[in-house]
Length: 462
Image 1 (cartoon, rainbow, N blue to C red):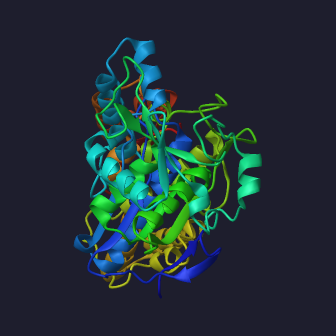
Image 2 (tube, helix red, strand yellow):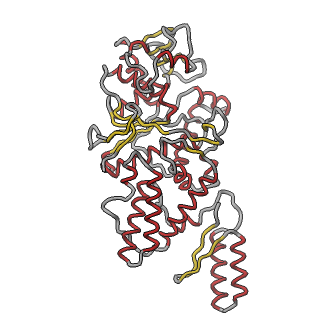
Image 3 (cartoon, rainbow, N blue to C red):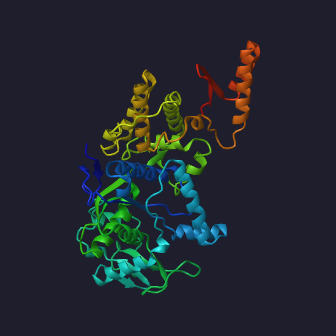
């Protein structure tokens, strides 16, 4: 089955045809590193990590290049540094490290490339100079601005006309602008702010030019897929497209534009500006990262997703079922299938709810399997499907022994000691003591399962 993806630019699903199957290229807008990422920020990370995995499955891991940038110069970063008393570099380094840890915890692979804005200032200056030379940008009072009127189809990506964009956006009408919709490519640096020497004076780049320059540097003038949240369609991606097309004399920039929908919390879009956020870092203290990932994938990426604890608890329950099925066949070597069962669902524009339904079917098959070959085949199918989804990649025992950060109660060693004491009591036919020990474990949130191969245990639901 060919991979079909919804293209924001054409407003329809299309069969994906890479420019070069031996080097499939994808760029996704990454974090501005000034504070903890909230769970809404994690949605594009998880969505495009899933696409990265799907592309690797189809074309081979060595034939897919995934770039996700880091914005490490920005007004919010400057404000965060001023508030904390740290240097800008200290803020961005500390925040980037935490971001990587949090995204790894929700199962995101490390992208092939993670270019930083501050490492590509020269590339940005060169692109701006090119835009000026071609009549698409102009310098004014230490600023350089893109002349929107110079591009005939500006607004084609977002589907807006220029008048609507000016009316519906908070457009700064500065005296140095030739037209209200013109946007900044370069701006002067204030005293105490980071800045770089340029033909227009000491300053720093605008946000949009950063991604255009980094994408060209690492993926070429034209590449396959550009992704991000739906909030980036306008103005960020619209402006990226304008800059890149004009700098490259109209040659194509991106073949497929993809955007994930918002996460909602209490009926409102989750955002730092509204203050209705839950950070990934805080959620990881209460839930396993894999449960957060499964919950995120419970809706198709273009659909809004209502985020709440109940959704995560349901996700953990589903994963308990899958890991329980795998736990029962730890002594069986998996027989991996030639075709991964969930790929049919994922090839239909990343239909993750359907893929999760396939996981449940595979777990049922594994639980019902009687012969060793049937168990091996079912186990292999479940593990292979989980791997493409970024799930079921840890040891079942580790999964069932997870507990929230700072949780009291019995540690693993004490649980094992009490289980051993209970087994000894049962062997001595001291059933009253065995029942007392079982109750002590149950009261501590430990569920026991007695089977022909002994007693296994897991921690209670979070």
